[in-house]
Image (cartoon, rainbow, N blue to C red):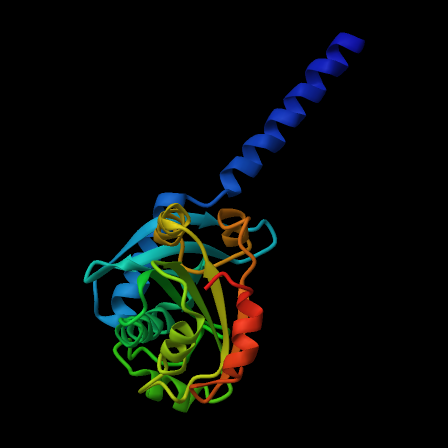
Length: 241
């Protein structure tokens, strides 16, 4: 009897496993579905960089995607399993990339090398106009704030010069408010950060692991103005700049 009970129990477990396997969505079908929904929403061609999965209790799955026209701008998207909706961060990612390019131009006088990442706190927006400006973005999300990650490998020590460059980095972006996280590192740390950002749509806790020997300098800014005096900044820099 024990033997037969074992066989029966095994058959039951195999049946349950088969049913559960049948309920697991087809990953390839979900990726194709997400691409189609993004193509239709933005009238662009998209590809999936990485499938991020689906929680067992959720009716949606997540992907990391990019437009073939902007392959270096990754963004996350959540799509309903039944195809009824897609929520994505494509517009915010495009807007933040434009801001990064403007800031990089303004910081051109810094002696050394920089890596920049701008991230909106609220990344969703009720618009399919991916080519909008930061000003247009903020007119829709007027209370939004930003985290600006500035990784800097200095070629010389001059805190006053760094401060002066920072005060002008939001020229043309005066609608922005938030915090700068300034990491001072060497070229190796800069390269590791670049590799980290190339694989992700947004910064997470793992950046601190990449730059684990670097404590960031937090610099608040409001309406494009740095909210630290030069003396406060130099004290916070502690001789690193």
